[in-house]
Image (cartoon, rainbow, N blue to C red; front, top):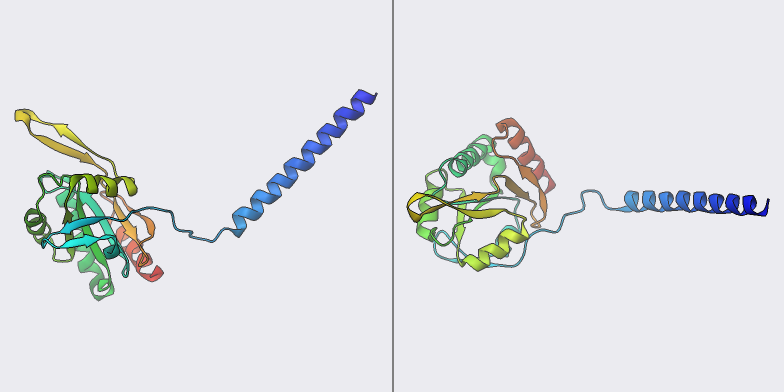
Length: 198
């Protein structure tokens, strides 16, 4: 009998503890700020496509689109930059405060001049960024960007890499992504929301 009572007390105590824990978790989740920014990014010093130093400060002050790719990319990168140009055209004056950056995942070969000529072939709204490979690796890691060399015939290589466009608010906080091949209407709607968020 005493044993049964002890078991009942343990069960009751566990039940109370579970209810209390659930209550605390609910309070924590409800108390957390909505749209709390996810920590991405890092300090960096790289080179823009005009050969000038550029730092992480360029990613603050205006909402931004960030894309990581490379100039020898056969399909994904030119398609994405073409689509980005289309987004700017569709948004018109609404996108006057929107910045866009094209970071090279192949800085060993992508010089500032190459980045400039490549981006300019699509639009003058995208700033190419290259520089020290180790510094670029640090940046890619901080934004959770995957990139790796893939050997090709003749001792050359291409790059596999993350294909999404990252969206940042004016404080440089990550706000979401636009997937490769995402419908233009969907991408533009996301950018409009980004611009509203400031």
